[in-house]
Amino acid sequence: MKQPFWALTKGHQPLVAVALHDGHHVRPEVAELLAIDKNDRKREEDPFTAAWTDIAQTRLVVLRSRFEVDLNRPRKKAIYLKPEDAWGLDIWREVPSPEILEQSLAEYDRFYAVVEEICTHLEQRYGRFVIFDLHTYNHYRNGQHAPPAEQWLNPEINLGTGSLNRQYWQPVVERFLGDLRRFDFFGRQLDVRENVKFVGGHFARWVHSHFPQSACVLSIEVKKFFMDEWSHQPDLQQMAAIHQALRSTIPGVLEELQQLSRESAENYQTMAVD
View 1 (cartoon, rainbow, N blue to C red):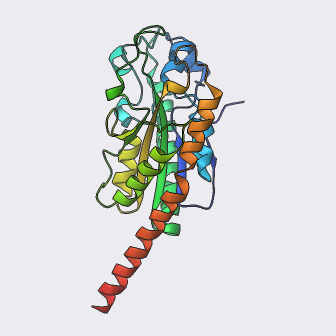
View 2: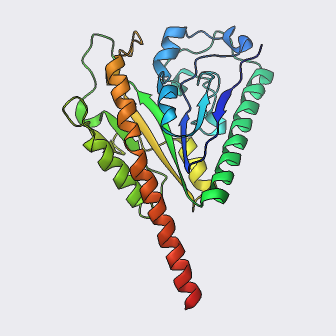
View 3: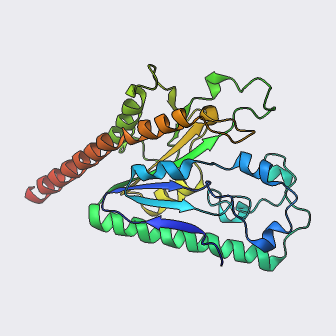
């Protein structure tokens, strides 16, 4: 039985949580051509992000590996063909045929058609909505026992807002950052910063370009400090605490969304009177 490309759960909130890179499966015809082993693949994927998506009622979890097609890159660059496309890794034993590549890109197109349907529905139903774009990133790239990447350039949680209308969405962004920083993470605060390591990828840019007045994508990159990125073993307590930290931001984000809607309604009424 063919494994689906993604799993979608629909809810009744102006919130969506997306895990683009949690998936590890690849189609058999793709797997036959891969030179990269499962371990190296998994190190560059974002395991455990699917579990965090239940912070929102609407959840979109991609089940296929980014090494089949990367949904967070532009279509022309969505398939890693050369080592320089993928952190210097040797991906293929044999270059995939045009037919295999086209099938992967067809899945890419179907995914974005589904995203468009979800966003259109939320726009029509709520006017404005927020998407939590959940990722993780590596900081031991030089080896399991080598020193980690420097903390000053690698926050524990990086919020990417590079393609966002930051001025308009400032109340939502600042509330999210503030609530996340205030969370009691085993007696301390998390190192949460904006646009230090990442500014957000193609997914966020696509949503913002297609829904410029209604969509706020928060591209959240969690450093893999909660797990061993080489053995893929998580610290379950830390992983659960990150889950709770993300969940703690939901009431504030919803409150700021409601406030933006009220202000827009009041401005509309004022313009109508004038």
